[in-house]
Image (cartoon, rainbow over the protein chains, first blue to last red):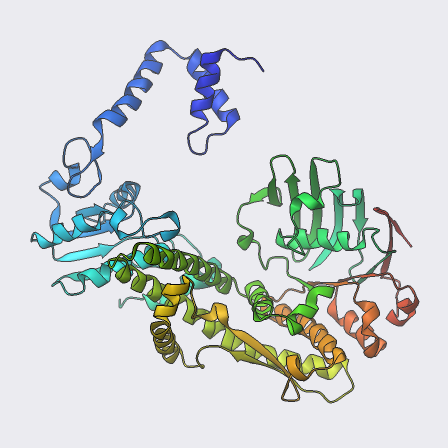
Length: 198
Length: 370
């Protein structure tokens, strides 16, 4: 198949994106081609700024426009609590709940020796420094409930066990709007272990 | 649950085969290498997404073709269709449940329960401990989804921990020890749960073994499975013993870069009349035990899931001459939908064939009803 070379290149680049196949890439490329120049320009600008203007927060490694992210800079957040998450996308998920008003710490992954990720490749030393420097009183572990996430929590708990801190882990249990009878046994089991007094 | 019909395309010798089945006994007859077992293989795919003999999908495609496809429809409380499509060029297998793609085979495990009695079953009683673990894991996983999920997590933890052990040997980095401790803790957490469930399983399964033995053979033989693991029943105790064993194996684990302690090294010891089958059993006793294991599996899964599994017997009927044929036949009528392949036409009368049964002749990938 002979396509105009720029079109072929655009399809090739678009299909490198996650969950975009060859067909979707082709549809997107043709769509861009038909689109107004201004729309295309503003897309290009948005992509360029994404890479040039967004950095990792020097404190918590969340996404930030300046040195520090909006959450670390905010005066309204409770600076005594740090919630530990795997990726910046987890921050977005937790922020959407409006249930949490403390700070975050993005590890940048979880322990995964098979993929060559050990504690050194995660932002753990920085977390220790943050806790050492003072006002933190509670650490909340909000990692995924699988072997890698659990092991990372266990490893961090070992580090912070001796500190005068409250260490907590987010609860595991039934999804809102879910049916008890359709939930898998492991989840129901966990929900029972983590039951609360009402 | 019954399998109503299947369609095979480019599946080994079957270029295009379409079959409907009896709810009772389906007898598949034909000479060697005509494509009898392929039909069972196709049924196994529809129930599990997996190959019966762990063969490569590429070998299943008819020579010179680009894909194979198997589609089938099940009937239970509701009707379900499953379909598997393998693209030989992309080397990609897609599985569909009611036209929706299933991405994790664990998600349909146990939905279409199946029990298969096959020649290679001799490895369960005669082979290495891994064969017996695989048997127990497959029965438990079909019966309990939570067991399957924990087993998958446990196996992943084993790989992670082994990888960290190699890294430790390579770099000798002291900082890795505390990470190893964390992985060990996860291993013990998941491993203890596996041990607990296996203990319960063996206790329950022994009852099924007893009942089945009573029914199929005349001799007074008492079967028993003993679970051989690193500790006994009490749960708290399990974790402590697990921990101690792993602590004392630490140096050796580091040297060998493998996980030396845990339920992945368990064994299940089979006994007949208190004697160890592997050491003292006769050929006949081994064969009997293998058959009874499968029948017991059938009734165990049936009770656990409240769903009748499909029963497959591949080319073993001829070997069962030390059983009373009418007993087997009686048993099979209790079992529900059964598929038997055989080259042996002479013993067909012994099966007490009735009108509802179906006889399928297979000749070089072509099928006909007799």
